[in-house]
Length: 473
Image (cartoon, rainbow, N blue to C red; front, side, top):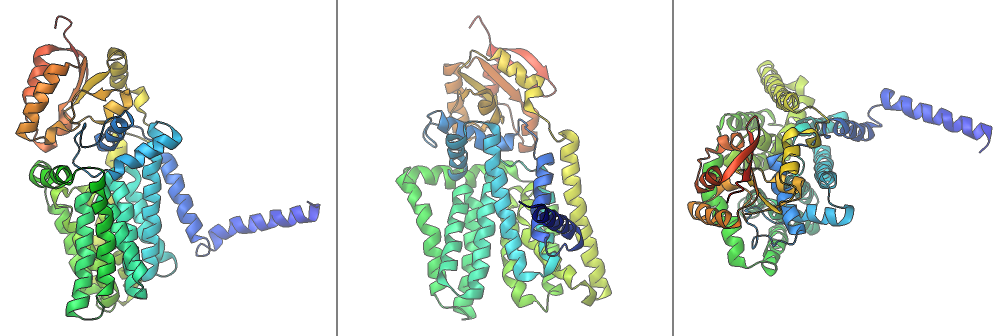
């Protein structure tokens, strides 16, 4: 390279760097992804004993250890999330960070889809506002989580659905249905509600408005059903029905219900946008319809995490309203500004509360409680971590003495069965944290009674307790 070429290259580099700040529209996409990467290099560095992450880590770890999902170990969520982590471990090796990478990639895929959807409705820099709000919301989320894998498929299914409505091309509807099916394979109720939302919108336009032919509906439904039916080639259909349909319907909602105040707040905002977007009503209608269903599917547990996870259409509608802010009447401007401010404050408060308790770079390896488990249970092959500490099995590289990883959600019959199993297996160690299940109205049972009667407390820190089997037994 000559001196002149090198000088020219250097000047071009400087101009490009300057352009990032002086021409943000031109480099908005690059800036957006740099912000995403920067934020998660800082805030995505926590390695905690997180029960929400533990569900997937535990399932994937036991599959990796040779156990059979739904046959040797009981889970009530679909298999895709477990196998995403399982195959990541097969490729990159067993570690917390290789598992977390799958969640980060799923979140990035969801953000890319949100930006694509925003591009249908918003111009210039406005199209990045919904994605930015979503990034900030996600800073403290548990990334190794079936909800995170699910939302990536949900977003892209919606994208191809909206694209199909615009292009009328059958392959877009088929892709939307296929991605909705994968959403079912990561989290059944959310995927099924998504299929219901998109299929019902097509039904209305086919049979009532008569603006669409029947073929888009057929393509969508056929593509959404086939992958789900393929599950029956790996597990008995009757077993899948029991663990993925009957059990969640009967036992999950009653143990997980929370106050609906926040859900009602977002529904009120959605209704407000129906009136404020009168001029863009036809274009925004599919998004409003989909958002209603996404909010409705949070009813079993309408907490901050599950709601913030699904309100990306609301972020797009907010940006669309803000883009036309100057044309709104004064009372409408005050409503939009007020609601938007509340949403932003909620997002910030959600993250602040999380990071005050567990700052960035927090690590499980520095935990005295975790080190106590490693030291006291070094010789144990099986342990029991309950009522809801499923991640401990993976972190300690031990297997569960029970087939159940979430004792707080078991039926009376399953609890009785688990009590017999643990009395027979007599695992050397039992790690307990009852504070984690207070929100589920957990009541102590025969398993807890067996541990209290036959184990000795060897370590306690806060609400965490570690027991060892009495040497005399």
